Length: 393
Ligand code: PLP
Image 1 (tube, rainbow, N blue to C red):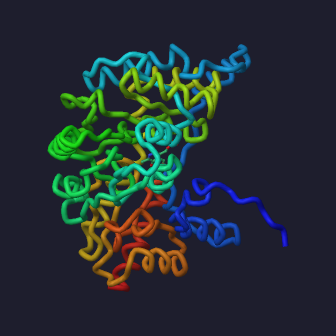
Image 2 (image 1 turned 30 degrees about the vertical axis):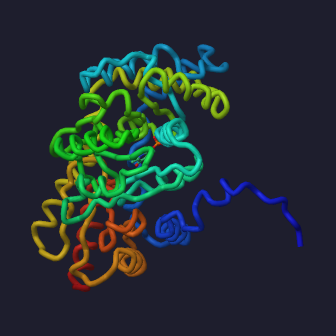
Image 3 (image 1 turned 90 degrees about the horizontal axis):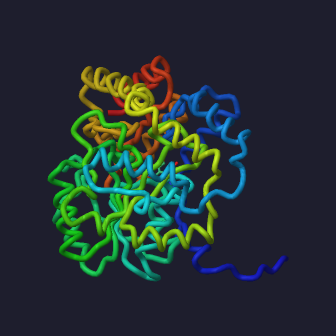
């Protein structure tokens, strides 16, 4: 037997012994590889690839020589473009000194928590949550503590739930438009969050990677609430808004003094993001809102399909589908858990959806449907899901 040197507690406890919640996704992939006709409505990735003009820009930048070490905080041009975009969307004065370019939103989530949390700090996150949140918090040595958003509140985070946990916490991580629920936080929710953060001295880490995909309501960045710019780190990304998931480019936007410190972390991790990727991201952002709407349009169409098909039955109920690329469905009327429903739907009907339990406790009895296959296949899979629910109810 080989005896290994022990690894750090930090690395061996990143997942806290839990599964990462993606078992169903992996099972669906295995079944597909084995030749089963599985329709995957699991992972949050577009069914289109990065647009050709963005790739041409990337190619030209690389051929033109932008292949050396890039400036660690990101190029001035890209940071200026991101800052202008944020300022014009929110009205908050923003310059390149507020922006660091990161390897996607995920690295921005890590960097922001690294910047505000010390070892053992209580770091709040909202359940249901995007799969990487607890691991990200643990990976900086902090202690993830859930604040629960409830289905009966349409998964809007309630002030009382937050206040109950805010004492002694260092940070709060929120996500609107939300993955997995598809909910957009209302002005009242954002206002409540801001007030609790100010009252308890919390840093707010605001994951806004779906901010271009709003179907109902208005996206309000909490950084624009009075007194919040100096305590908020906004996480942004090109992944969802521009279908650039594989390019790994995103950003943190925060107070200049904090951004200057996080630059030190980037020196010891990525050492900058590839220059030709940054040039492509800068080009993509100049394509403006029309292009972003074009990327979001398929999800908007499929959301309409969900609404149309749901109207013809009364077993499955949808959480308000306000943004992002998901429908969160309440399937409790079938008497099944989200896991039982998703497992049986995959095994019997070859439709793969994510159990709500994969995203926390509050979304038990739900399944998350990613709106990420073409409209015809999507309609057919969704009809299958509804008739399956009707059989089981
Ligand atoms: N935040 C949320 C809520 C997400 O859903 C995702 C990806 O699915 C990310 C962050 C990370 O995205 P990326 O690292 O590709 O920017």
